[in-house]
Length: 223
Image 1 (tube, one colour):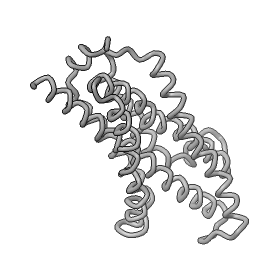
Image 2: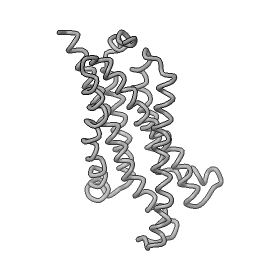
Image 3: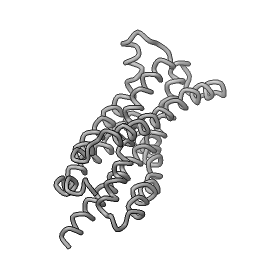
Image 4: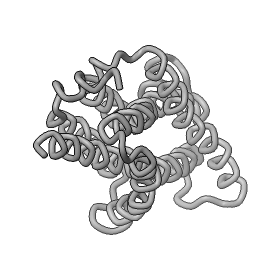
């Protein structure tokens, strides 16, 4: 019974972390849309987008959304190939911190571009693209690892473990954009605050991982 309790506690910690990861992903989707629109407005010196500027903002936003997927996908492949099971707990603690730092730096992308001698919206969005790749790695690369670990924790409920780590977490992540809208349009009306909240959320996933039972995870590695 004690063993079952330890396994289920570890599983629910992983599940809570995935909720945070997916929610952060959806938060960043909203933030990048608003950020690219603000970037285009600032470059044009206007307060509202017309059809032409809206098209330009959309062209910048699309690659940024894709950059998150690059970080998530290639990061997941890399961890699947190279992450030893005995380092899984450390990965769940450290990798989200990379994503948290990258999210905090995204609003500073135009300043970084100018430091490099680049100018214009394309330059700023290119720097932001590199940061969103790092952010995607921070919140998305561990999702397949969490599925594998969840199945090893609950070998008698592998379908349940997979479903909860994916669909069970995604269905709650829908609140992410709504939280960002509330901050951006209502409570604070400051886009930078949204980035801070998103970064804080993924840092919380790192903190939660500290409570994973490391000895148990190492013991079930060969399963």
